[in-house]
Image (cartoon, rainbow, N blue to C red; front, top):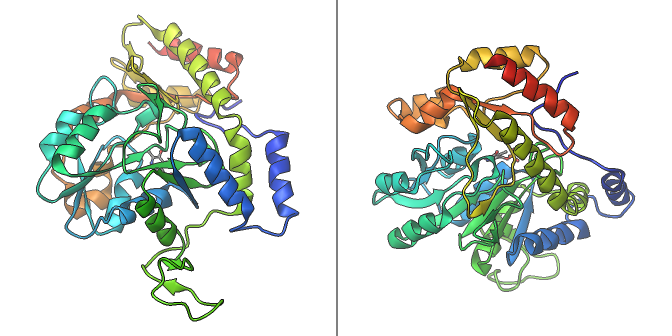
Length: 374
Ligand SMILES: *Cc1c(COP(=O)(O)O)cnc(C)c1O
């Protein structure tokens, strides 16, 4: 029996919601999109939501809407999936990596300040593992330096910072992912939420070829067939099949997070006080979505722990290799980038299995195997 690190939870209701769309008139750009967007916007507490084909597309159109262009620098964390930085490269901008806080593993606001130059245009904080970044500090820095804030909340749908849901904070935009291991899934899928009407308009343009039929945006109107391409956009549209699954999944998000949080608590209870292990610390004023449970092996050789757990059928993983380590980044001017806290965490971290469908019995097997190692 293999226990993966993450897995979707799909019910008969989810399947029925998808089947209903398949029997309807619209497979894409139909009513299920608007319904999902409205539901998600209401859930996170944002005015506008734009559903797209995946989380990477969400980050890309957010950078485009924010006006990231060649010559611009955007500050993000190295402990993230490559997409958090690639979205800047897509726009011709340059990602700049600021080191993490060794306690929360999230981007350190003081390190952000250290990396600001006259070219800095935006900050992309990533709520790593679902634990919110210190957003109050990040917003203060952004205000002082006139920077846009695009939250990468791929891990953090449903998480809260100072009593407010991620997606309702005063950032310019917040991006979510609905990949199967993420808090809810649409197969592939993503979303950007914002409170800004102008950004919403631009996000909608970039999602669909830069094309509009809106009277207010077009220079003229030659008739009922007429539309205009105003920007160089993409086809990043979500299908109604995905959106229906997303609406159905959203109903269960709170229960998913409750279950993840309970299981995370069980891990911490089991490992607390064991020398050589470091459990993830939580901010008292935030509530994590518990996308990942990252355990640090401080004395054990991490590579060996990984191999032994995999042999035992436990799908541990490493989230993440610091982004600037990748050959593409090394080749493109990052060979001297070095964030000591990120390096230190990377040497010791393993993600343990954590998902709503993980049983206590399966989790006990994981706990037992980890304890055997140390
Ligand atoms: C998953 C993920 C993304 C990209 O989302 P996709 O839907 O897979 O494109 C971006 N950032 C982070 C931190 C992620 O974990």
